[in-house]
Image (cartoon, rainbow, N blue to C red; front, side, top):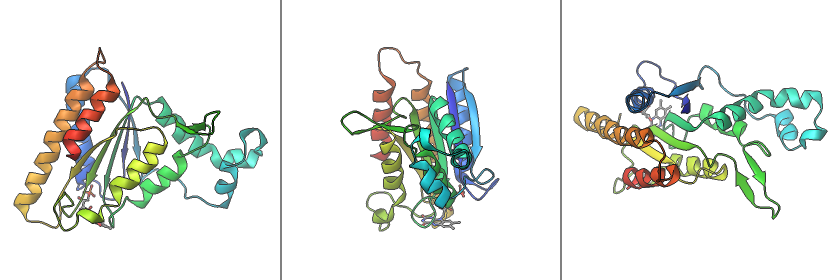
Amino acid sequence: MKILRVDASAKRERSNSRALSRYFLERLREQRDDIEVDYLDLTLDTPEHVDEAFAIATYTAAHERTAQMNARLAASDALCARLLAADALVFAMPMYNWSMPSVFKAFIDNIIRTNLTYRFAEDGSVVGQLSRQKVLFITSRGADLRPGSPYERMDALTPALKAAFGFLGVAAPTFVDAQPLQFADQEARTEALERARVELDAVAKQWGQRVSGRSSASASASVACTVIG
Ligand SMILES: Cc1cc2nc3c(=O)[nH]c(=O)nc-3n(C[C@H](O)[C@H](O)[C@H](O)COP(=O)(O)O)c2cc1C
């Protein structure tokens, strides 16, 4: 099972989201001995922001692109290839200002590519090319945005991730949201991390099951229900 693991926190050793994604991979390795990890740290390998050259090249048909256009798209092509080669995607990130870290947004801008990660069917509808992949988002939040909290409506992160990856064919991503990890007392923070670890244990067990009889897509959907509520 080939996993693309992506971290996006500006923090390193002190990062909760990095620690949780590491924890998840450790639990998954206990379940399966065929785990191969392709690791991407977006704070070290930050994809370039969209500029004019990219914006023009990406919507120019492949057979009409100049060598310069191809060069501008090369890093984005490589990121798309890494996604498509993976069987599962593990994205870990903190919430920054109610949404995603800018490095992760730059990543998204580089991986939504016509005729690579999505195609058009004959009837004009969009066919996302990541429908095969299991997808786990691990997010860390300083505040508590769970249902019923005063901050519930401030969550611009979950819908943005669902929209971008839904467009690429990810129908039932799993979310494990660790919260509150900063704007709360120590006890609440400790409980939040423990809740996240328990949820990650369940996802690791589920991903650990070899697909037999039950489809991986339906397995993924059922954890999403447990985790999201
Ligand atoms: C620049 C910045 C912006 C933040 N914005 C928010 C926010 O809007 N809402 C929130 O709940 N927490 C916010 N936080 C807190 C982080 O999401 C929280 O501390 C998280 O656990 C950090 O994850 P990490 O340890 O992996 O870096 C922010 C933190 C930073 C550094």
